[in-house]
Image 1 (cartoon, rainbow, N blue to C red):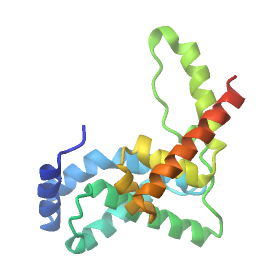
Image 2 (cartoon, one colour):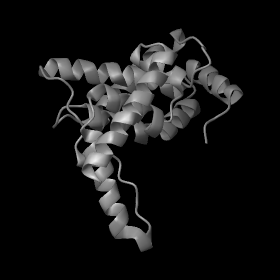
Image 3 (cartoon, rainbow, N blue to C red):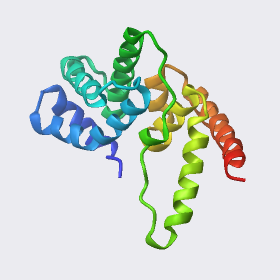
Length: 183
């Protein structure tokens, strides 16, 4: 469950004061999804934990300048992590690769539907990895990271309406690709 706006403002104030408990809260609630994002976006062989650690260090260095725009602190962290990933990718001289099946989060199948879940999960993963990097990023941030349209807009540098439109189009493409891989 996402924190309410007052809780988020209070957490931001504590983080600005470099309260270790506030940073631990931010870390615990954000770290798993940040690592998944980095794992999916980084070139093969790059360490997603290192990228998240770098993003957290940058966040702590810059938190005093963060303005309260009503966005969650986690959205700001995704923006910093996105820059870390892009810098790493540029340094490697490659563009960010599409996620492989092994890099995407694996939901646990129910005990009675293990075979069907495995087949459907594989189909969704194949369809997802066939999308463009931009489509994957928008869907990942909206659906997996659970950022709002406004938060994703802030992370990727687009307008909120453009993010909603990109999400809608990406979902349409995902649906079509899913029909191709799992008729």
